[in-house]
Image (cartoon, rainbow, N blue to C red; front, side, top):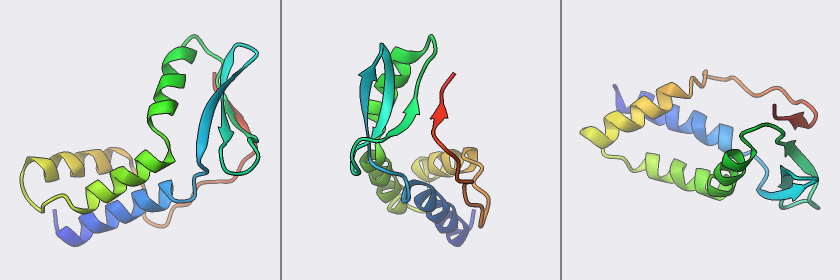
Length: 111
């Protein structure tokens, strides 16, 4: 893969992560919720499934700051070798289309 295309893939991932709010996980009524850590704790996502515990641990481990650190790591991957192949496979698996932007919706409920 050409380095320029790889850099475009990293940039698309950065544009996906960048606008995300910082979040924290809180438990309310026995279910985990992602709340906006920067702007008053508004509800971002309520998780309500048999996977609550696993999803809560995941969202505690993978927050916006760590995703931005992943973007920074992807930016410095050498252009050849196993790390580059793994990075390309990861970025390709995200299926981020050029110019695509997420639709804005109201609060979502996991299920």
